[in-house]
Length: 279
Image: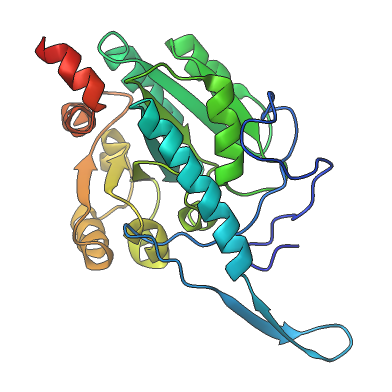
């Protein structure tokens, strides 16, 4: 078991460089566990101390694993920049509405921009099928026992997706408020999605996730009359851990607040897409 998050460190497949596996969704993937910090990337090593079964003290330094993931993430970043393609990493707890938000975004903006999706789940391809029906190309990654995507998985999936120049790639990470925040994938920005069906204390309970994000989307606002959720307290907690992150209040099903979400996306559109619009 991995010391960082408890995922299995082993797979039936040997490690490979990004781009060597044409089917990243066919099997679980070997993946390393290297922390990714907030914007600016906290590259500090994590030391784990404990006792092994023989009674000897164990000190584990994960700097080498950190360096491996970050090297691959930088290659992913360069590959995306070469295509002037924007990658957004969407992270949340299970059930926050990531897939519903993506479906609505694809239907509303699909005629304006080229959109593609990389879908991360432990098992099944149900969400990928929903994305495909919404009208976007999609690549499914099944992580098996893994609780997050890493840079190597993304590199393989990007080459399978093969996004056209000046496009957007949405990365729907595995539903988890812990480990996805630790891994640099080579993305341009990170979005954490919460919902009013969760507690308003999520930003302070999972501070690293919120601290590592560029945007916070509070979803399912249409359910606010039916649940106990203090929006003001959520905003205070979010700003206390990450004062630079903007918070958007939306309903992906009803459409409330989505204009602000779309404007945030347009502000980050790939540069080539901007130049084409100006002609």
